[in-house]
Picture 1 (cartoon, rainbow, N blue to C red):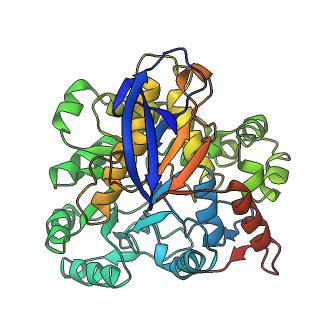
Picture 2: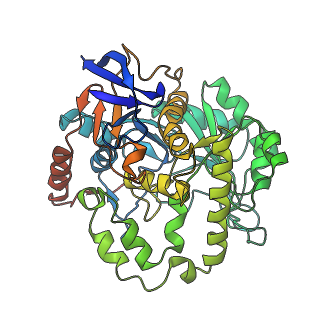
Length: 436
């Protein structure tokens, strides 16, 4: 196949061949015309850096069969998924699909069950207790070894810690209890002793600064209460942040926003269409109903600004918080790219930086969370041929456009077969839903 490979040389065209699931030849053959709108770009598979496969994204609070979720990811060219909450609940179904459906399958790395704080004197519970999936509560340091051992027995390869009071703006009220500092300080060290990375869920600048001081470097969200200053970024050297705009945005969206965004390619083919019926009847944003419209709107502005600042510094991870209501597996990551790009997609270097972050950079992050050395030379002779063919910049397509083709270890993904499998699962007596 004749392709451009921006990760190798954006000015060249390559001939690429695949044999036995690996790249057998990657050879530069010609100069690339920057106005070429036809020759596709080859990028590594997309990676979802913040998913929740055990949480119900559907507006009726139903949970899609994990086999459907896997197919939704593949349809959109997502080949690797980092699950940050409750994957053991759906693990059997995910693995059943991999065994039985005879289709390419995404890889998943997961944390088992997240760890959070106990109930405090004011009656607040730790963040995570409100979700329909279990969490471990930490009360004393010895609990850490118990939690880490239990999660490792369930296949976890990293730890997820909840550490936020739920504030979104400086004047916001407290919603959750937090782990005490003397306990949180031990978490990165003890996790490392178990061979695990630790990911922490924070909302505010103060929470991030405290967690950073205790040794945390991977943050599940960007700061949402303020825009970080240059001095803040200097103080946070080595920290990384997942973007997660898509998980928060449905709270403030109007009906027309939902209907427009759910027209993205692949939504109707892969998602439960009852969601379209539901949003078509929304009369006002959920944020107005719950009296958080203004704070959530301001939070999203800060999150995007801080995410783009992280992108400039090589500190961004592109993840969605999908599994939150209205943020759907597969579809949400493509929407996340559009939200990050905004009206600036034509800004020099932005498109390529976002694609690189969602593919090559994110793959290294996925490998890190999986407990293995990050893969290098993802597009090289002898490397597994897992990649997407994407419209070039000259084609003028949004980043949410579906890949022209997706390959997983050399096997082309047949989207028609994926849709057929999804439809078959939705036609069963359970309608493709599971109870956990």
